Amino acid sequence: MKRSSYKLLGVEVDALSIPQLNSLIAEAIASNQKWIIANHNLHSLYLYHHDYKMRAFYSKADYVHIDGMPLVFIGKLLGFPIKREQRVTYADWIWPLMAKAAENNWRVFYLGSKPGVAEKGAKILRLKFPHLLIKTAHGYINNRQDSRESLNTVATINKYQPDILIVGMGMPRQEHWILDNLHHLQAHTILTGGACIDYVAGAVPTPPRWMGTVGFEWLYRLLREPKRLWRRYLLEPWFVAKLLLREMINV
Image (cartoon, rainbow, N blue to C red; front, side):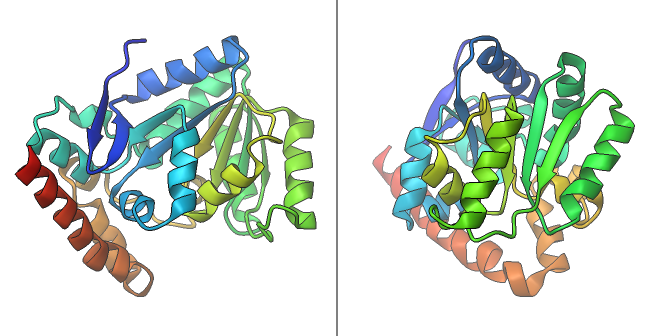
């Protein structure tokens, strides 16, 4: 597959659509690779510039897709030919990804969400895709690398031998956990899935998809959870704006 990669605001991103991402997973499985497919949005970009472990994680990632319309708009502003369909969020991707997994008998392991939520989401996915092979474990564990819970979780994942491992613990916890355990994890593709199963299970309301297309999904989330998200959506973008201004001046 021809790779379209761009550097913006100090990070590397790959302009990939859902079909292209599914093809990458198929390629990793067919060639017996172990690839990290990460993603960037404004929040991860802020964390990248403030957290050395996030920078270390992204240096290990094989592909980094765009998860946030603001990054598409910024890319266009900087002159990159990034298309709307190359913004991929798990609220949209989880369904075609699971359809592809069921079609190809790929084994999926999801680590994340509160106890009970991941299994509820998996049941919904199995009803929609009867041939889907999926196993889950909740993400409320002691995520220290040497903790018994973390070691047991790695052992459970490796026993299952997943083709796709989705870690949905939220940023930056999921990236830290993957980085700490990468050498021991046995999976063909490792994805940072955020709240993808929470959306499926209905534990987190899915924003109207038109809001994602026009770049206002953040507003929906902010209005739903203002206490948790006000800093992410009202303060962090100012740091990103400074990065953009600096980059535009230097162009």
